[in-house]
Amino acid sequence: MSFIRTVKYTLSYFIFAITLFSCSSRNTPAPVSNIHSISVLGERTKDTIKSSQYTVKKGETLYSIAWRSNSDVRKIARLNSIASPYRIYPGQKLILVVPEVTKSTKASNSTVSHKNPTKSSITKNEKSQKNTLASTKKQAYGENVSAQKSYQNSTLESEKASDKFSQKISRWQWPVKGKVVEYFSNSAQGNKGIDITGRRSTKIRSAAKGKVVYAGNALRGYGKLIIVKHNDDYLSAYAHNDRILVKEQQQVNRGDIISTMGDTDANKVMLHFEIRFRGKSVNPLKYLPKK
Image: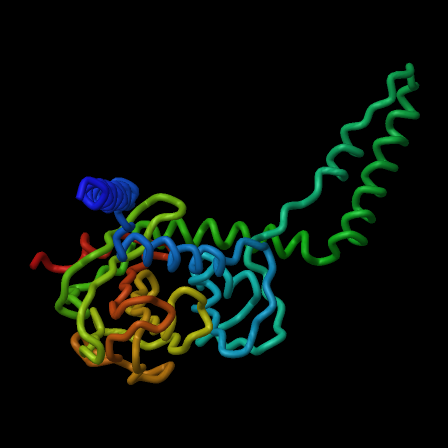
């Protein structure tokens, strides 16, 4: 009897120890929303264009490229002499950032001999340097130097003028009813919009009147995406759709149904909604009416 009792006590202690160990070693799992935000934001960050030049791929528009490069579509259009409605084609090479003129010409111009040259030799050297510099610029940059200067001047003038006259939207509306689970962040790796949860196939509506300038799935981390241009200043985007119900260049009114909620390129059903002002992300909650 004592032997059986000893075995029972041993088994009881063993079971208790295992239970205690499993409870103490259990880690609290990360919230699903955090896992989602890390993975999706990572995909969006990878898809950001950081180079000064870019080759157009099939299915892209100038608006989607400007979106990925966090730039104003008008700047890219002016830099590449593309007129509205900004049509581009696969394989086309675009300049996204004005290239900086190298400093080698400046260095050669500032080089001065440390010997004691005569006045006539200084004059000759100055003329020679000017001629060399002019020919070097022509050979190295051709017409791009003057084009870049004129572009920079026109860009600065147009930006100064447009800064004074912001084209405001008279009224915004929520694209869908639901719970906001991820908020806007100004940090480099932060969420550039808000995430709203809901049921699959819930109707998504345009937040303001405008024109559809992108409808597709070429932007990694956004799934099936719609970008609506409201005016020259404001764009809005609707990501992770299940079905896209509008086409590019289609005019939409505020409240028009443009898609249905889904989970494309995401791990849960939700709408990722963004507003951009002149190519830069802004907090949608500052524009949408308070609930």
